[in-house]
Structure formats: structure tokens, C-alpha cells
Length: 203
Image (cartoon, rainbow, N blue to C red; front, side, top):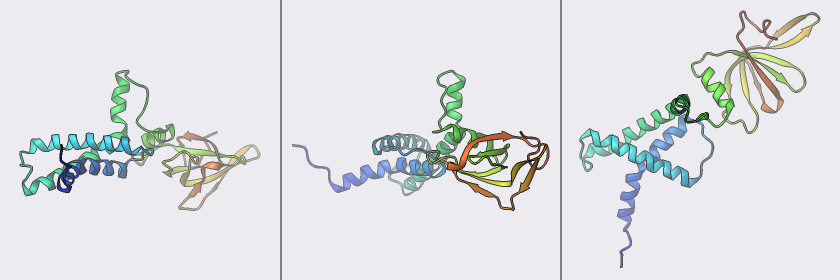
């Protein structure tokens, strides 16, 4: 008859798997991801634990040494940061697309593909937002919602209203810091690169 594992053995198992969960938490802290099942999260944590201990094996430290725990948790944090950054840049899927293995990206929506690719470095084109009531707003999207389920939420700076004043399109600037636009109001968004302040060259 097999003996039931003691609480100490259970603690050892938990401690061995903990670095993987640390990496997973760090990854989630810097990267938006859709909600995952508990089983899938556990499997990811197991894979990350294996990766962390593989990297740790090259340090030459003895597992029972006093520096081992500190080192493995530092490795877990760095691993989570690197995985999260790599996923946010979509580097691994970009490589797969170059080899013709897939046409997908790692991000959950085209919305995030566009904004993380074009605006991750603090640069990118201006936008003109077309609202349900026919009004239009131009500006630079400083913030955008991660989730698209409730509609595309944007915060625009350097913004203004556009309207047709006879034969010429006119603008009314919105005072700083900007304007928050809720997703339910947005019909579509046009991207453009103005040659001068405002949106007079965008149609």
C-alpha cells in the first residue's frame, strides 16, 4: 500500500513549480491576454518551470545552497519579462509567418495588432474617428483599450472636431489634455499622416 504524501512533500512540489507561476504572473502583468482556463494556465506554468530550471542548471549552483532560491526566482522574473515582451512584439509568430507556417498573430484581435505595432514606440499616424451621429474627431491615440469586446475605446490628444463649413472643411480644436471616446459611439476609424497641424489634408 502506497503512503500518502506528507505535507512537507506537497510543499516541496509547490516550491518546485512556483517559479513557473512567477513567470506566468510577470508575463500577464505586462501583456494583455484573454482569460485562460485553470488547466491551460497550469500547463503553461509547468512549461515555464521546466524552462526556468533548465536555465538555472547552467549557473552551476547547488539546489540546496542559500543563493539557489534567489537565483531561480530572478530567472523566473526575467523569463516572464522576456516572454511577455516577445509576445507583445509578436516576434515568434512573425518568424512563423515568414516560414509560411501560419498567417496568425499572437494577439487576440486585429485591434491590438494595429495599435501595438503602430504605437508601441510612442509614434504612429493620427486618426479620424467617425461617430454614429455623423460627427468626426481627429487626434493622436495616446491610450487605447486592450479589450475589444465592449467596443474600441480611445483617448485622443492633439484632438479636434471636423465639420464641413461650406466648400471648406473646418476644425475646432479640443482643449488639452484630450478626449475619451467610448466604443459604442465609434463607426469606423481612419488612419492618416498629416503634413501640418490638424486634419485638413485627410478626407
